[in-house]
Amino acid sequence: MNRTHTIIFTCLMALVLALSACGGQSGPAPSAAVEPLARTISANGDPEKGRLYYENQGGCLACHSTGVDKLVGPGLAGVMTTAGPVYPEGVNYGGKLPNGQPRTEENIAAWIRSGGQGQIGVMSPHEISDEDMANLLAYLHTLQRP
Image 1 (cartoon, rainbow, N blue to C red):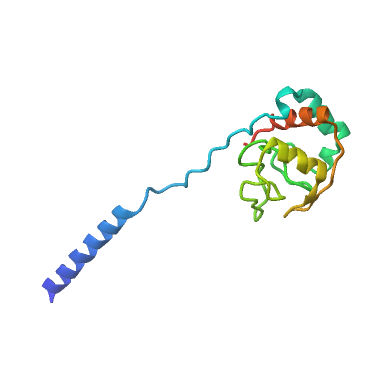
Image 2: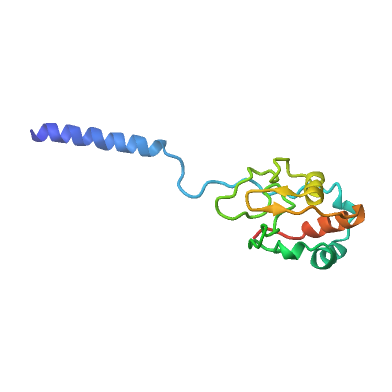
């Protein structure tokens, strides 16, 4: 009986070692690279004028923080990156805008202008000149994810 137990134990240990060698490396999964969006609209924008628009004229501060904290809408840190802003737990747009469009400056500008329903709430439409939009997007590029 001892010999049988020894053989079974040896086989089980060999199986455990073989299976543990098949497992991947431990640790957190690699995250997708966070890259800035191409500057197609904001290239000629003035970030300081965009900040003033954000804080005073646009009404943006009523719903959005410049960090990761959710107010009515998400915080806008990282909004001008491929990953987008940090959304509250349970909210996932799959790397796209709330309207399902790819994350580009053109689509973000259209979302700001048209507004719409998202998982968090409703984005109000905003009338904004092309110059103010270029400035606003240039400013939003300065808001980095932590």
